[in-house]
Length: 127
Length: 127
DNA sequence: CTTGACTTGTTATTACATAACATGAGAAGA
DNA sequence: TCTTCTCATGTTATGTAATAACAAGTCAAG
Ligand SMILES: [Zn+2]
Ligand SMILES: [Zn+2]
Ligand SMILES: [Zn+2]
Ligand SMILES: [Zn+2]
Image (tube, rainbow over the protein chains, first blue to last red):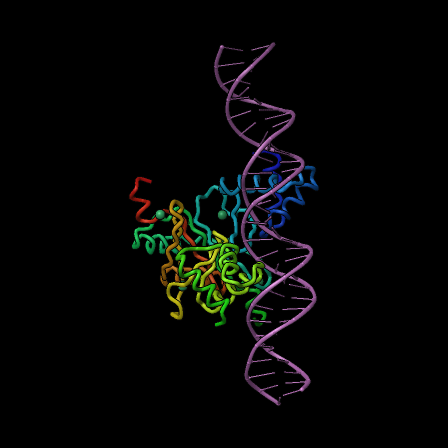
């Protein structure tokens, strides 16, 4: 854990939402770190590899992990109205996926499960 | 269904694999259609909206749907070795996801489920 | 024959991501 | 101590994916 990496994680935690790499980069630059894309991408890559952050394919964005160290299988719920992202651990979904893939002889190593829809708050507000 | 859209679908079907938008665009241009990104993106968007093709977030790519019209819930199995993409319909996975999200009050409208791993052929060939 | 919806085409720009190279700090070994 | 190796950080430059904004043509409805 080096300064850039630590700061990158802090940024993700502070904002508490999904952030694009360039958005993270701007913050890092403000704090005196490099202002070039690789600076952010490398730090984010490190965090993802070490289970401290996740990448959201649908959003081209990153978010801090809410259960670091716990060795979990995250599922993301993205609200299309307020853009909030909830990370939930749904082993049942993963298991079902592994089973379904297994029937076809496919070995799942990593899986991306991201749902787009409405969070409780936005759903209540009449669509 | 217009010429560009039909041709775009044909291209996806012919190659029988996931293709990037710019790759599709090159083919379209060869056939006398426009050579600008929007040409491909619009046609692909149309196909996706009408359930004739799918978008693979992990690959920034598109693939023809193998069960068009059937109103299904696709799950993609992407082989990291041979790059083949298998589309399978796994209602169980979707249901589990909907249930898990429902417990948190989240309403799922669309879901991206993509697994990365090894296909039967590549798994056999000793990792 | 005019209006309006829609499709296709263009130019230009924005957003996202990585390749390739240079430098400096620190650990490991002579 | 003085190399040497590894790794983190920084840079420049480029590659790749996606969209904004506008122009022109088709065609059916009125
Ligand atoms: Zn997590
Ligand atoms: Zn919401
Ligand atoms: Zn399909
Ligand atoms: Zn394979």
